[in-house]
Length: 320
Length: 219
Ligand SMILES: C[S@@+](CC[C@H](N)C(=O)[O-])C[C@H]1O[C@@H](n2cnc3c(N)ncnc32)[C@H](O)[C@@H]1O
Image (cartoon, rainbow over all chains, first blue to last red; front, side, top):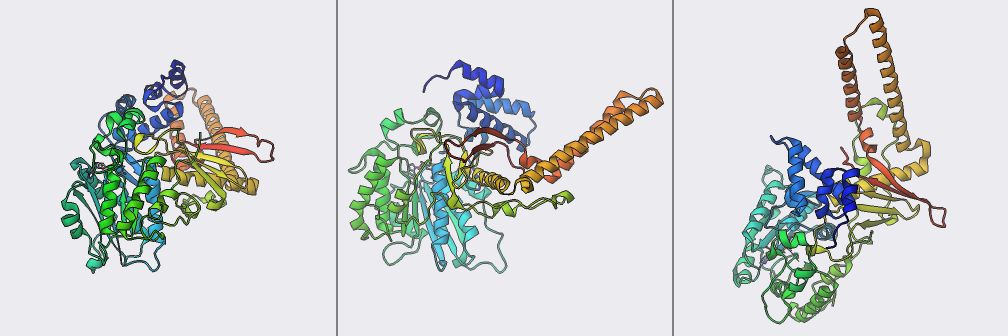
Protein backbone atom coordinates (compact mmCIF):
# COMPACT_ATOMS: atom_id res chain seq x y z
CA UNK A 1 0.00 0.00 0.00
CA UNK A 2 1.53 3.35 -0.96
CA UNK A 3 2.26 5.79 1.85
CA UNK A 4 -0.15 8.66 2.25
CA UNK A 5 1.20 12.16 1.66
CA UNK A 6 1.63 14.16 4.89
CA UNK A 7 -0.21 17.04 3.20
CA UNK A 8 -3.30 14.83 3.04
CA UNK A 9 -3.34 14.61 6.83
CA UNK A 10 -3.06 18.38 7.08
CA UNK A 11 -5.88 18.77 4.64
CA UNK A 12 -8.08 16.32 6.57
CA UNK A 13 -7.36 18.18 9.81
CA UNK A 14 -8.02 21.58 8.31
CA UNK A 15 -10.99 20.85 6.09
CA UNK A 16 -12.81 18.17 8.08
CA UNK A 17 -11.54 17.50 11.59
CA UNK A 18 -8.55 16.04 13.44
CA UNK A 19 -10.67 12.91 13.81
CA UNK A 20 -10.82 12.59 10.02
CA UNK A 21 -7.03 12.73 9.92
CA UNK A 22 -6.98 9.89 12.41
CA UNK A 23 -9.23 7.85 10.11
CA UNK A 24 -7.09 8.44 7.03
CA UNK A 25 -4.70 5.48 7.40
CA UNK A 26 -7.72 3.16 7.22
CA UNK A 27 -9.89 5.16 4.83
CA UNK A 28 -7.11 6.22 2.42
CA UNK A 29 -8.89 9.27 1.02
CA UNK A 30 -10.61 12.41 2.31
CA UNK A 31 -14.04 11.57 1.01
CA UNK A 32 -14.29 8.21 2.76
CA UNK A 33 -12.72 9.64 5.91
CA UNK A 34 -15.41 12.33 5.96
CA UNK A 35 -18.14 9.76 5.30
CA UNK A 36 -16.95 7.33 7.95
CA UNK A 37 -16.58 10.07 10.54
CA UNK A 38 -20.16 11.15 9.84
CA UNK A 39 -21.40 7.57 10.12
CA UNK A 40 -19.53 7.05 13.39
CA UNK A 41 -21.09 10.23 14.80
CA UNK A 42 -24.55 9.20 13.65
CA UNK A 43 -24.06 5.78 15.22
CA UNK A 44 -23.14 7.37 18.55
CA UNK A 45 -26.13 9.71 18.28
CA UNK A 46 -28.51 6.83 17.56
CA UNK A 47 -27.36 4.42 20.26
CA UNK A 48 -27.89 5.40 23.89
CA UNK A 49 -25.04 4.97 26.34
CA UNK A 50 -23.90 6.35 29.66
CA UNK A 51 -20.49 7.17 28.20
CA UNK A 52 -20.30 10.78 26.95
CA UNK A 53 -20.82 10.96 23.16
CA UNK A 54 -17.56 12.80 22.48
CA UNK A 55 -15.57 10.08 24.20
CA UNK A 56 -17.42 7.34 22.36
CA UNK A 57 -16.76 8.96 19.00
CA UNK A 58 -13.11 9.27 19.92
CA UNK A 59 -12.85 5.61 20.96
CA UNK A 60 -14.53 4.36 17.79
CA UNK A 61 -12.38 6.60 15.58
CA UNK A 62 -9.25 5.30 17.27
CA UNK A 63 -10.28 1.70 16.68
CA UNK A 64 -11.17 2.33 13.06
CA UNK A 65 -8.01 4.34 12.47
CA UNK A 66 -5.98 1.32 13.56
CA UNK A 67 -7.49 -0.67 10.70
CA UNK A 68 -10.41 -2.51 12.31
CA UNK A 69 -13.16 -2.75 9.66
CA UNK A 70 -15.88 -0.15 10.20
CA UNK A 71 -18.50 -2.91 10.31
CA UNK A 72 -16.82 -4.50 13.34
CA UNK A 73 -16.41 -1.09 14.94
CA UNK A 74 -20.10 -0.22 14.52
CA UNK A 75 -21.34 -3.80 14.76
CA UNK A 76 -23.46 -3.80 11.60
CA UNK A 77 -23.48 -3.74 7.81
CA UNK A 78 -26.55 -2.69 5.81
CA UNK A 79 -27.61 -5.46 3.42
CA UNK A 80 -30.67 -4.64 1.32
CA UNK A 81 -33.07 -3.18 3.83
CA UNK A 82 -31.58 -5.18 6.70
CA UNK A 83 -28.94 -4.13 9.19
CA UNK A 84 -26.91 -7.31 9.50
CA UNK A 85 -25.03 -7.68 12.79
CA UNK A 86 -21.31 -8.19 12.34
CA UNK A 87 -18.78 -9.60 14.80
CA UNK A 88 -15.09 -10.35 14.54
CA UNK A 89 -14.69 -13.99 13.50
CA UNK A 90 -17.44 -13.84 10.87
CA UNK A 91 -17.02 -12.43 7.37
CA UNK A 92 -18.62 -9.04 6.69
CA UNK A 93 -21.20 -9.17 3.86
CA UNK A 94 -20.00 -7.53 0.62
CA UNK A 95 -21.90 -5.20 -1.73
CA UNK A 96 -21.57 -7.62 -4.67
CA UNK A 97 -23.34 -10.27 -2.62
CA UNK A 98 -26.03 -7.77 -1.67
CA UNK A 99 -26.59 -6.86 -5.33
CA UNK A 100 -27.12 -10.38 -6.61
CA UNK A 101 -29.18 -11.41 -3.61
CA UNK A 102 -31.61 -8.56 -4.30
CA UNK A 103 -31.64 -9.51 -7.96
CA UNK A 104 -32.28 -13.12 -7.03
CA UNK A 105 -35.20 -12.13 -4.83
CA UNK A 106 -36.76 -10.19 -7.70
CA UNK A 107 -36.32 -13.11 -10.10
CA UNK A 108 -37.76 -15.59 -7.64
CA UNK A 109 -40.83 -13.52 -6.91
CA UNK A 110 -41.53 -12.42 -10.48
CA UNK A 111 -40.74 -15.43 -12.59
CA UNK A 112 -43.29 -17.77 -11.10
CA UNK A 113 -46.77 -17.83 -12.57
CA UNK A 114 -48.83 -19.01 -10.91
CA UNK A 115 -47.05 -18.55 -7.58
CA UNK A 116 -45.72 -21.87 -6.29
CA UNK A 117 -47.12 -23.71 -3.26
CA UNK A 118 -43.69 -23.65 -1.74
CA UNK A 119 -40.20 -22.43 -2.40
CA UNK A 120 -37.14 -24.12 -0.93
CA UNK A 121 -33.68 -22.58 -0.69
CA UNK A 122 -30.33 -23.87 0.58
CA UNK A 123 -27.45 -21.47 1.33
CA UNK A 124 -24.09 -23.18 1.86
CA UNK A 125 -21.32 -21.26 3.69
CA UNK A 126 -23.87 -18.83 5.10
CA UNK A 127 -21.64 -16.70 7.38
CA UNK A 128 -23.80 -13.98 8.98
CA UNK A 129 -26.82 -15.53 7.25
CA UNK A 130 -27.17 -12.38 5.15
CA UNK A 131 -28.22 -14.17 1.94
CA UNK A 132 -31.05 -16.35 3.28
CA UNK A 133 -32.23 -13.56 5.60
CA UNK A 134 -32.57 -11.06 2.80
CA UNK A 135 -34.26 -13.66 0.58
CA UNK A 136 -36.67 -14.52 3.38
CA UNK A 137 -37.54 -10.86 3.91
CA UNK A 138 -37.94 -10.01 0.26
CA UNK A 139 -39.92 -13.13 -0.58
CA UNK A 140 -42.05 -12.85 2.53
CA UNK A 141 -43.09 -9.39 1.34
CA UNK A 142 -43.59 -10.21 -2.32
CA UNK A 143 -45.04 -13.72 -2.46
CA UNK A 144 -48.70 -14.42 -1.70
CA UNK A 145 -49.30 -15.90 1.77
CA UNK A 146 -50.22 -19.22 0.18
CA UNK A 147 -46.59 -19.83 -0.76
CA UNK A 148 -44.59 -21.65 1.90
CA UNK A 149 -40.88 -20.93 2.31
CA UNK A 150 -38.42 -23.59 3.43
CA UNK A 151 -34.97 -22.02 3.80
CA UNK A 152 -31.79 -23.47 5.33
CA UNK A 153 -28.31 -22.06 5.89
CA UNK A 154 -25.20 -24.13 6.66
CA UNK A 155 -21.78 -23.08 7.92
CA UNK A 156 -18.87 -24.89 9.55
CA UNK A 157 -18.12 -22.05 11.98
CA UNK A 158 -19.92 -22.02 15.34
CA UNK A 159 -19.35 -18.24 15.53
CA UNK A 160 -21.04 -17.79 12.17
CA UNK A 161 -24.01 -19.98 13.08
CA UNK A 162 -24.64 -18.24 16.39
CA UNK A 163 -24.40 -14.83 14.68
CA UNK A 164 -26.71 -15.99 11.89
CA UNK A 165 -29.24 -17.09 14.52
CA UNK A 166 -28.92 -13.75 16.31
CA UNK A 167 -29.53 -11.96 13.02
CA UNK A 168 -32.53 -14.16 12.34
CA UNK A 169 -33.90 -13.41 15.77
CA UNK A 170 -33.50 -9.68 15.20
CA UNK A 171 -34.93 -9.67 11.70
CA UNK A 172 -37.73 -12.13 12.02
CA UNK A 173 -40.32 -10.82 9.55
CA UNK A 174 -42.89 -13.46 10.29
CA UNK A 175 -46.08 -12.13 11.83
CA UNK A 176 -47.21 -13.48 15.16
CA UNK A 177 -49.13 -16.74 14.69
CA UNK A 178 -52.33 -15.87 12.89
CA UNK A 179 -55.63 -17.25 13.99
CA UNK A 180 -56.37 -19.78 12.69
CA UNK A 181 -52.69 -20.73 12.45
CA UNK A 182 -51.29 -21.31 8.99
CA UNK A 183 -51.35 -24.91 7.87
CA UNK A 184 -47.91 -26.57 7.94
CA UNK A 185 -47.69 -26.36 4.17
CA UNK A 186 -47.90 -22.59 4.31
CA UNK A 187 -45.20 -22.05 6.85
CA UNK A 188 -42.18 -19.89 6.30
CA UNK A 189 -39.09 -21.04 8.08
CA UNK A 190 -35.37 -20.34 8.07
CA UNK A 191 -33.05 -22.67 9.97
CA UNK A 192 -29.29 -22.61 10.45
CA UNK A 193 -27.16 -25.74 10.85
CA UNK A 194 -23.55 -26.03 11.90
CA UNK A 195 -21.66 -28.57 9.81
CA UNK A 196 -19.04 -28.78 7.08
CA UNK A 197 -20.27 -28.98 3.53
CA UNK A 198 -17.56 -31.64 3.08
CA UNK A 199 -19.10 -33.79 5.78
CA UNK A 200 -19.83 -37.26 4.38
CA UNK A 201 -23.17 -37.35 6.18
CA UNK A 202 -24.37 -34.09 4.61
CA UNK A 203 -25.83 -35.75 1.54
CA UNK A 204 -26.80 -39.03 3.12
CA UNK A 205 -28.49 -37.86 6.29
CA UNK A 206 -28.79 -34.09 6.91
CA UNK A 207 -30.12 -32.70 3.64
CA UNK A 208 -32.79 -35.40 3.05
CA UNK A 209 -34.36 -34.43 6.39
CA UNK A 210 -34.54 -30.75 5.38
CA UNK A 211 -36.09 -31.06 1.92
CA UNK A 212 -38.71 -33.51 0.67
CA UNK A 213 -37.65 -35.95 -2.04
CA UNK A 214 -38.54 -35.25 -5.62
CA UNK A 215 -38.58 -37.67 -8.55
CA UNK A 216 -34.94 -37.00 -9.42
CA UNK A 217 -33.29 -35.63 -6.27
CA UNK A 218 -34.57 -33.38 -3.52
CA UNK A 219 -37.23 -30.77 -3.93
CA UNK A 220 -34.98 -27.70 -3.98
CA UNK A 221 -35.63 -24.51 -5.95
CA UNK A 222 -32.35 -22.76 -5.31
CA UNK A 223 -28.87 -23.69 -4.18
CA UNK A 224 -26.84 -20.57 -3.43
CA UNK A 225 -23.31 -20.21 -2.07
CA UNK A 226 -20.59 -17.66 -1.52
CA UNK A 227 -17.77 -20.04 -0.56
CA UNK A 228 -14.18 -19.15 0.38
CA UNK A 229 -12.53 -18.57 -3.00
CA UNK A 230 -9.20 -16.79 -2.56
CA UNK A 231 -6.02 -18.58 -3.63
CA UNK A 232 -2.98 -18.72 -1.35
CA UNK A 233 -1.02 -16.30 -3.55
CA UNK A 234 -3.91 -13.84 -3.86
CA UNK A 235 -4.41 -14.03 -0.13
CA UNK A 236 -0.80 -12.92 0.40
CA UNK A 237 -0.70 -10.31 -2.36
CA UNK A 238 -4.11 -9.19 -3.66
CA UNK A 239 -6.11 -9.13 -0.45
CA UNK A 240 -6.54 -5.90 1.48
CA UNK A 241 -4.68 -5.70 4.77
CA UNK A 242 -7.84 -4.95 6.75
CA UNK A 243 -9.34 -8.17 5.37
CA UNK A 244 -6.23 -10.27 5.99
CA UNK A 245 -5.70 -8.99 9.50
CA UNK A 246 -9.25 -8.80 10.77
CA UNK A 247 -11.56 -11.16 8.90
CA UNK A 248 -11.53 -14.92 9.48
CA UNK A 249 -9.20 -16.86 7.20
CA UNK A 250 -11.65 -19.76 7.30
CA UNK A 251 -14.12 -17.62 5.35
CA UNK A 252 -11.66 -16.63 2.63
CA UNK A 253 -9.45 -19.50 1.56
CA UNK A 254 -9.24 -23.22 1.69
CA UNK A 255 -5.73 -24.52 1.82
CA UNK A 256 -6.08 -28.28 1.48
CA UNK A 257 -6.20 -30.24 -1.75
CA UNK A 258 -9.33 -32.09 -2.70
CA UNK A 259 -9.59 -34.11 -5.86
CA UNK A 260 -8.22 -32.79 -9.10
CA UNK A 261 -8.77 -29.02 -8.99
CA UNK A 262 -6.89 -26.00 -7.72
CA UNK A 263 -7.16 -25.36 -3.97
CA UNK A 264 -9.14 -22.15 -4.50
CA UNK A 265 -11.68 -24.04 -6.64
CA UNK A 266 -12.21 -26.92 -4.21
CA UNK A 267 -15.47 -25.55 -2.88
CA UNK A 268 -16.95 -25.34 -6.38
CA UNK A 269 -16.12 -28.98 -7.03
CA UNK A 270 -17.91 -29.94 -3.82
CA UNK A 271 -20.84 -27.59 -4.51
CA UNK A 272 -21.31 -29.10 -7.96
CA UNK A 273 -21.11 -32.58 -6.47
CA UNK A 274 -23.86 -31.61 -4.03
CA UNK A 275 -25.85 -30.07 -6.88
CA UNK A 276 -25.49 -33.30 -8.88
CA UNK A 277 -27.19 -35.23 -6.09
CA UNK A 278 -29.84 -32.72 -5.04
CA UNK A 279 -30.64 -31.53 -8.56
CA UNK A 280 -31.88 -28.09 -7.53
CA UNK A 281 -33.79 -26.07 -10.11
CA UNK A 282 -31.26 -23.26 -9.90
CA UNK A 283 -27.69 -22.78 -8.68
CA UNK A 284 -25.96 -19.50 -7.92
CA UNK A 285 -22.33 -19.42 -6.85
CA UNK A 286 -20.25 -16.33 -6.26
CA UNK A 287 -16.76 -16.48 -7.80
CA UNK A 288 -13.65 -14.35 -7.32
CA UNK A 289 -13.20 -13.02 -10.85
CA UNK A 290 -13.38 -13.85 -14.52
CA UNK A 291 -10.62 -16.47 -14.52
CA UNK A 292 -12.22 -18.41 -11.72
CA UNK A 293 -15.60 -17.98 -13.38
CA UNK A 294 -14.30 -19.60 -16.56
CA UNK A 295 -12.76 -22.50 -14.63
CA UNK A 296 -16.02 -23.04 -12.78
CA UNK A 297 -17.96 -22.96 -16.04
CA UNK A 298 -15.69 -25.73 -17.36
CA UNK A 299 -16.32 -27.69 -14.16
CA UNK A 300 -20.03 -27.28 -14.69
CA UNK A 301 -19.55 -28.72 -18.17
CA UNK A 302 -17.85 -31.76 -16.71
CA UNK A 303 -20.64 -32.20 -14.18
CA UNK A 304 -23.49 -31.61 -16.58
CA UNK A 305 -23.66 -35.26 -17.60
CA UNK A 306 -24.05 -36.10 -13.92
CA UNK A 307 -26.65 -33.40 -13.57
CA UNK A 308 -28.54 -34.96 -16.44
CA UNK A 309 -29.17 -31.57 -18.00
CA UNK A 310 -28.79 -30.88 -21.69
CA UNK A 311 -27.86 -27.28 -21.10
CA UNK A 312 -31.09 -25.77 -22.35
CA UNK A 313 -31.15 -23.10 -19.72
CA UNK A 314 -33.73 -24.67 -17.52
CA UNK A 315 -31.42 -26.39 -15.14
CA UNK A 316 -27.81 -25.98 -14.23
CA UNK A 317 -24.96 -25.76 -16.63
CA UNK A 318 -26.38 -23.41 -19.20
CA UNK A 319 -23.27 -21.31 -19.19
CA UNK A 320 -20.76 -23.68 -20.76
CA UNK B 1 -13.64 7.02 -10.80
CA UNK B 2 -16.92 5.41 -11.44
CA UNK B 3 -17.71 2.22 -13.16
CA UNK B 4 -20.31 -0.48 -12.69
CA UNK B 5 -18.84 -2.89 -10.24
CA UNK B 6 -20.30 -6.12 -11.41
CA UNK B 7 -22.01 -7.63 -14.34
CA UNK B 8 -24.34 -10.31 -13.16
CA UNK B 9 -25.38 -11.63 -16.49
CA UNK B 10 -22.68 -14.26 -17.05
CA UNK B 11 -23.07 -15.48 -13.49
CA UNK B 12 -26.80 -15.75 -13.74
CA UNK B 13 -26.66 -17.45 -17.09
CA UNK B 14 -24.29 -19.95 -15.60
CA UNK B 15 -26.84 -20.56 -12.93
CA UNK B 16 -29.60 -21.13 -15.41
CA UNK B 17 -31.38 -17.83 -15.21
CA UNK B 18 -32.39 -16.01 -18.29
CA UNK B 19 -31.24 -12.49 -17.64
CA UNK B 20 -34.45 -10.84 -18.63
CA UNK B 21 -33.82 -7.46 -17.10
CA UNK B 22 -32.06 -4.70 -18.83
CA UNK B 23 -30.44 -3.30 -15.77
CA UNK B 24 -27.98 -5.21 -13.69
CA UNK B 25 -29.86 -4.60 -10.53
CA UNK B 26 -33.50 -4.97 -9.69
CA UNK B 27 -35.42 -1.82 -10.43
CA UNK B 28 -36.25 0.12 -7.34
CA UNK B 29 -39.81 1.07 -6.70
CA UNK B 30 -40.57 3.88 -9.06
CA UNK B 31 -43.35 5.17 -6.90
CA UNK B 32 -41.29 5.51 -3.74
CA UNK B 33 -40.93 9.24 -4.17
CA UNK B 34 -44.66 9.73 -4.29
CA UNK B 35 -45.29 7.51 -1.32
CA UNK B 36 -43.72 9.69 1.34
CA UNK B 37 -46.35 11.08 3.58
CA UNK B 38 -46.59 14.79 3.82
CA UNK B 39 -46.92 16.38 7.20
CA UNK B 40 -49.75 18.41 8.57
CA UNK B 41 -48.25 21.86 8.27
CA UNK B 42 -50.66 24.06 6.35
CA UNK B 43 -48.33 25.68 3.88
CA UNK B 44 -47.31 22.23 2.67
CA UNK B 45 -50.65 22.07 0.91
CA UNK B 46 -49.46 24.66 -1.56
CA UNK B 47 -46.41 22.61 -2.44
CA UNK B 48 -46.36 20.72 -5.70
CA UNK B 49 -46.26 16.95 -5.03
CA UNK B 50 -42.97 15.15 -4.68
CA UNK B 51 -41.92 14.42 -8.26
CA UNK B 52 -41.93 10.83 -9.50
CA UNK B 53 -38.75 8.95 -10.31
CA UNK B 54 -37.92 8.84 -14.01
CA UNK B 55 -38.18 5.41 -15.66
CA UNK B 56 -35.25 3.08 -15.02
CA UNK B 57 -34.61 2.83 -18.76
CA UNK B 58 -33.52 6.48 -18.76
CA UNK B 59 -31.05 6.01 -15.93
CA UNK B 60 -27.46 4.89 -16.03
CA UNK B 61 -26.39 3.80 -12.58
CA UNK B 62 -22.87 3.35 -11.30
CA UNK B 63 -21.25 2.48 -8.02
CA UNK B 64 -17.98 3.76 -6.77
CA UNK B 65 -15.32 1.13 -6.72
CA UNK B 66 -11.63 1.66 -7.00
CA UNK B 67 -9.65 -0.33 -9.51
CA UNK B 68 -8.43 -3.77 -8.60
CA UNK B 69 -10.07 -6.70 -6.90
CA UNK B 70 -13.46 -6.77 -5.22
CA UNK B 71 -15.58 -9.32 -3.42
CA UNK B 72 -13.96 -11.16 -0.54
CA UNK B 73 -10.54 -9.63 -1.24
CA UNK B 74 -11.47 -6.12 -0.17
CA UNK B 75 -13.81 -4.52 2.29
CA UNK B 76 -14.61 -0.99 1.19
CA UNK B 77 -17.25 0.97 3.03
CA UNK B 78 -18.08 3.06 0.01
CA UNK B 79 -21.77 2.93 -0.65
CA UNK B 80 -21.99 5.86 -3.08
CA UNK B 81 -24.48 5.66 -5.90
CA UNK B 82 -24.26 7.84 -8.98
CA UNK B 83 -27.05 8.26 -11.49
CA UNK B 84 -26.93 9.75 -14.94
CA UNK B 85 -30.18 10.74 -16.55
CA UNK B 86 -29.52 9.85 -20.17
CA UNK B 87 -31.98 12.22 -21.92
CA UNK B 88 -30.77 15.33 -20.06
CA UNK B 89 -27.26 14.41 -18.96
CA UNK B 90 -28.00 15.35 -15.36
CA UNK B 91 -25.78 13.51 -12.91
CA UNK B 92 -26.55 13.10 -9.22
CA UNK B 93 -24.76 11.18 -6.52
CA UNK B 94 -25.70 10.02 -3.05
CA UNK B 95 -23.37 8.84 -0.32
CA UNK B 96 -25.68 9.86 2.49
CA UNK B 97 -25.92 6.50 4.23
CA UNK B 98 -23.88 3.33 4.65
CA UNK B 99 -26.65 1.49 2.85
CA UNK B 100 -26.31 1.25 -0.89
CA UNK B 101 -29.97 0.29 -1.13
CA UNK B 102 -30.91 3.46 0.72
CA UNK B 103 -28.55 5.59 -1.39
CA UNK B 104 -30.08 4.25 -4.58
CA UNK B 105 -33.42 5.54 -3.42
CA UNK B 106 -32.08 8.89 -2.23
CA UNK B 107 -30.27 9.43 -5.54
CA UNK B 108 -33.51 8.73 -7.43
CA UNK B 109 -35.41 11.22 -5.26
CA UNK B 110 -32.72 13.80 -5.94
CA UNK B 111 -32.79 13.16 -9.68
CA UNK B 112 -36.57 13.46 -9.71
CA UNK B 113 -36.31 16.85 -7.98
CA UNK B 114 -33.77 18.10 -10.51
CA UNK B 115 -35.88 16.97 -13.45
CA UNK B 116 -38.93 18.61 -11.95
CA UNK B 117 -36.94 21.79 -11.58
CA UNK B 118 -35.87 21.57 -15.19
CA UNK B 119 -39.41 20.98 -16.42
CA UNK B 120 -41.36 23.29 -14.14
CA UNK B 121 -38.92 26.03 -13.26
CA UNK B 122 -40.31 28.36 -10.64
CA UNK B 123 -43.34 26.12 -10.20
CA UNK B 124 -41.20 23.11 -9.32
CA UNK B 125 -41.25 21.60 -5.88
CA UNK B 126 -37.65 22.53 -5.17
CA UNK B 127 -38.28 26.14 -6.18
CA UNK B 128 -41.43 26.40 -4.09
CA UNK B 129 -39.68 24.78 -1.13
CA UNK B 130 -36.84 27.24 -1.62
CA UNK B 131 -39.37 30.06 -1.69
CA UNK B 132 -41.03 28.88 1.49
CA UNK B 133 -37.65 28.66 3.12
CA UNK B 134 -36.78 32.15 1.98
CA UNK B 135 -40.07 33.54 3.26
CA UNK B 136 -39.57 31.76 6.52
CA UNK B 137 -36.09 33.21 6.85
CA UNK B 138 -37.47 36.66 6.02
CA UNK B 139 -40.23 36.38 8.61
CA UNK B 140 -37.73 35.13 11.12
CA UNK B 141 -35.56 38.16 10.46
CA UNK B 142 -38.58 40.43 10.73
CA UNK B 143 -39.63 38.82 13.99
CA UNK B 144 -36.20 39.21 15.49
CA UNK B 145 -36.03 42.83 14.34
CA UNK B 146 -39.40 43.38 16.01
CA UNK B 147 -38.20 41.61 19.12
CA UNK B 148 -35.09 43.70 19.46
CA UNK B 149 -37.03 46.87 18.75
CA UNK B 150 -39.43 45.91 21.53
CA UNK B 151 -36.55 45.12 23.85
CA UNK B 152 -34.93 48.41 23.05
CA UNK B 153 -38.20 50.20 23.69
CA UNK B 154 -38.68 48.40 27.00
CA UNK B 155 -35.14 49.18 27.90
CA UNK B 156 -35.84 52.82 27.25
CA UNK B 157 -39.07 52.68 29.25
CA UNK B 158 -37.72 50.83 32.26
CA UNK B 159 -34.32 52.27 32.10
CA UNK B 160 -32.65 48.88 32.44
CA UNK B 161 -33.80 45.42 31.50
CA UNK B 162 -31.89 42.44 32.73
CA UNK B 163 -29.72 41.13 29.97
CA UNK B 164 -30.51 37.56 30.92
CA UNK B 165 -34.25 37.99 30.62
CA UNK B 166 -33.88 39.29 27.15
CA UNK B 167 -31.63 36.51 26.09
CA UNK B 168 -33.93 33.91 27.55
CA UNK B 169 -36.91 35.19 25.65
CA UNK B 170 -34.89 35.27 22.48
CA UNK B 171 -33.71 31.73 22.97
CA UNK B 172 -37.20 30.47 23.44
CA UNK B 173 -38.31 32.01 20.20
CA UNK B 174 -35.39 30.52 18.33
CA UNK B 175 -36.20 27.13 19.69
CA UNK B 176 -39.82 27.34 18.66
CA UNK B 177 -38.87 28.25 15.15
CA UNK B 178 -36.53 25.33 14.94
CA UNK B 179 -39.29 23.01 15.91
CA UNK B 180 -41.48 24.44 13.19
CA UNK B 181 -38.77 23.65 10.69
CA UNK B 182 -38.49 20.11 11.88
CA UNK B 183 -42.19 19.52 11.60
CA UNK B 184 -42.26 20.44 8.00
CA UNK B 185 -39.39 18.23 7.00
CA UNK B 186 -38.81 20.29 3.94
CA UNK B 187 -35.87 22.19 5.32
CA UNK B 188 -34.04 19.00 6.15
CA UNK B 189 -34.91 17.50 2.85
CA UNK B 190 -33.04 20.21 1.07
CA UNK B 191 -30.35 20.84 3.60
CA UNK B 192 -26.85 19.48 3.45
CA UNK B 193 -26.85 19.01 -0.28
CA UNK B 194 -24.06 20.81 -1.90
CA UNK B 195 -23.25 21.45 -5.45
CA UNK B 196 -19.86 19.99 -6.04
CA UNK B 197 -19.17 20.81 -9.64
CA UNK B 198 -21.08 22.27 -12.46
CA UNK B 199 -19.54 21.17 -15.66
CA UNK B 200 -20.50 22.75 -18.92
CA UNK B 201 -21.49 20.10 -21.42
CA UNK B 202 -18.50 19.52 -23.63
CA UNK B 203 -19.44 20.52 -27.11
CA UNK B 204 -23.11 19.88 -26.53
CA UNK B 205 -25.88 22.03 -25.23
CA UNK B 206 -26.37 19.74 -22.28
CA UNK B 207 -25.22 20.88 -18.91
CA UNK B 208 -24.08 18.26 -16.48
CA UNK B 209 -24.91 18.98 -12.91
CA UNK B 210 -23.26 16.90 -10.29
CA UNK B 211 -24.90 16.96 -6.94
CA UNK B 212 -23.94 15.06 -3.89
CA UNK B 213 -26.33 14.14 -1.16
CA UNK B 214 -24.30 13.82 2.00
CA UNK B 215 -26.80 13.93 4.76
CA UNK B 216 -29.25 11.47 6.08
CA UNK B 217 -32.79 12.05 5.06
CA UNK B 218 -34.86 12.32 8.18
CA UNK B 219 -38.02 10.90 6.82
C1 LIG C 1 -16.94 -15.99 2.01
S1 LIG C 1 -17.77 -16.43 3.47
C2 LIG C 1 -19.45 -16.10 2.98
C3 LIG C 1 -20.38 -15.73 4.09
C4 LIG C 1 -21.74 -15.23 3.65
N1 LIG C 1 -22.44 -16.19 2.83
C5 LIG C 1 -21.63 -13.91 2.91
O1 LIG C 1 -21.86 -13.90 1.70
O2 LIG C 1 -21.31 -12.90 3.53
C6 LIG C 1 -17.58 -18.16 3.50
C7 LIG C 1 -18.15 -18.92 4.69
O3 LIG C 1 -17.90 -20.31 4.52
C8 LIG C 1 -17.69 -20.90 5.78
N2 LIG C 1 -16.98 -22.18 5.58
C9 LIG C 1 -15.66 -22.37 5.43
N3 LIG C 1 -15.41 -23.68 5.27
C10 LIG C 1 -16.60 -24.32 5.32
C11 LIG C 1 -17.00 -25.69 5.21
N4 LIG C 1 -16.12 -26.66 5.03
N5 LIG C 1 -18.32 -25.99 5.33
C12 LIG C 1 -19.24 -25.00 5.51
N6 LIG C 1 -18.92 -23.70 5.62
C13 LIG C 1 -17.61 -23.36 5.52
C14 LIG C 1 -16.95 -19.84 6.56
O4 LIG C 1 -17.13 -20.05 7.95
C15 LIG C 1 -17.59 -18.56 6.04
O5 LIG C 1 -18.63 -18.15 6.90
